[in-house]
Image 1 (cartoon, helix red, strand yellow):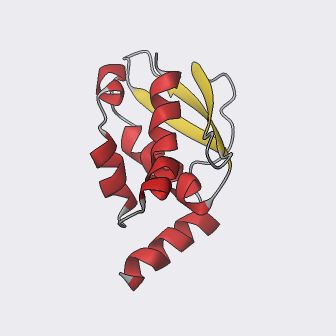
Image 2 (image 1 turned 120 degrees about the vertical axis):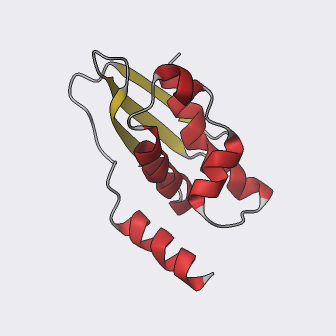
Length: 119
């Protein structure tokens, strides 16, 4: 379990998918009404209809930030239909740790904003 925590902490300190995409084809913002975390997503969809880039901006906790960073990697190469069909369980598995119900909401905020961006 300590290994997972170290990986999560490292991902939080060194996110790969945080920032803006100039000329993003899709954008969305969501807020967790319980804790106040806010996530914005910018997505670039290629001419072939695949997600080619995902960037998040996070004003929130470690769980929501890391989840967004990991989910961005997971979404790249998928088509819009595949993104719309990503399940909550997939995101929680990608996160790699058991979470309390309130922290699950933080982890799933990334999925909410990603799906909103491709609607």
